[in-house]
Amino acid sequence: MPDTQVFKDRLTALKADVTLRLNSIDKDIRHEDMSADWSEQATERENDEVLESLGINADQTLLMINNALQRIEVGEYFICSECGGSIPAARLELLPFSALCVDCAEYLERETGATQSAN
Ligand SMILES: [Zn+2]
Image (cartoon, rainbow, N blue to C red; front, side, top):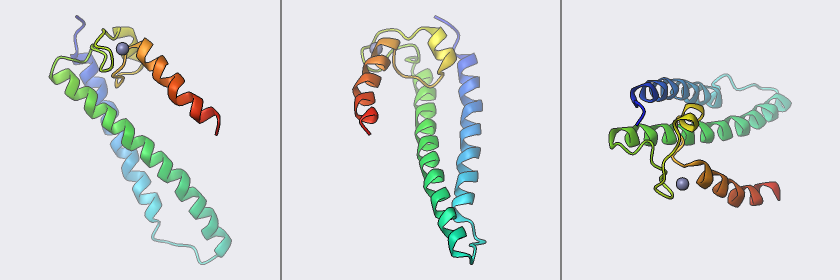
């Protein structure tokens, strides 16, 4: 079984990165210096939507990172949370917060991808 320390370090660094990003998104959304110009305000509102969706993604990423760190703690980092099979270290090097093996991830992507592409 590969050493988890390197993954733990990467996840901790990623977590700091995402937390920073979340903080700066929060600051941007608040933008205290609200413009008096209406069209500019409209643009700012559009930006807010983008920022909010980024915020949600960053939130989700943060959850996945915390989940992965938890999985390291309990010794389940290399175990797929869906089928209980093993997750190859090569996959975790690309996606250190993945909780799924390739098969399960592809299966779930197909399931959710179908509704997304109909959008
Ligand atoms: Zn699996």
